[in-house]
Length: 198
Image 1: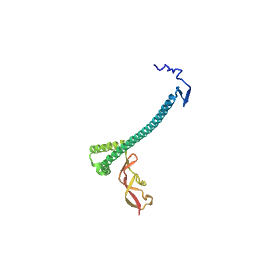
Image 2: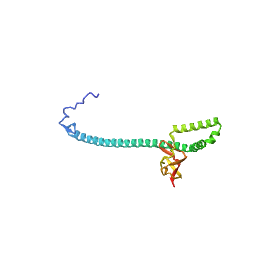
Image 3: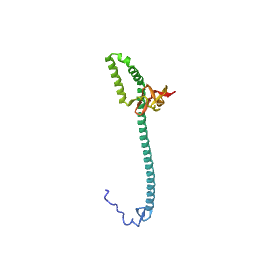
Image 4: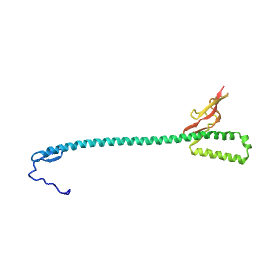
């Protein structure tokens, strides 16, 4: 029998129709078919409710697991980025004594001018390359201006210099060591001396 054929119930078996929740039953002469069909539909409805509840539970659990996984992935990405930043900062901190050595060499102008010009040019070029590489990785100098007021976030006051001039009070008198930052994060504050009125 194919799907298009209809099953015909003999007239002798057919009796009055009973409608139960949009399902049409044809009563047999003894009424056994209706009771059996009712039980079967009740069981199917119960099974359907259980299946729908399970489906909802599975869907809810899957959505929670997916959200947890997305949050875990974001957390891992954030931790990886933070680790990379800390590694770059640590590497930069290890290079700071090299930059300080260059600054000390360049600050003694009299001695620096006595060095052979070609050698001096080579050293200055190497320093420029180092500064350029650091700049390309987000590292910049914190070089305060003399006479400016120190910023506690960027400068560290290591000593005071006495003065009679009240207008210089607490301003930067001398830069002892340049500071450096990576982006907005301070790797090392600039070390300065400040004026202090006697």
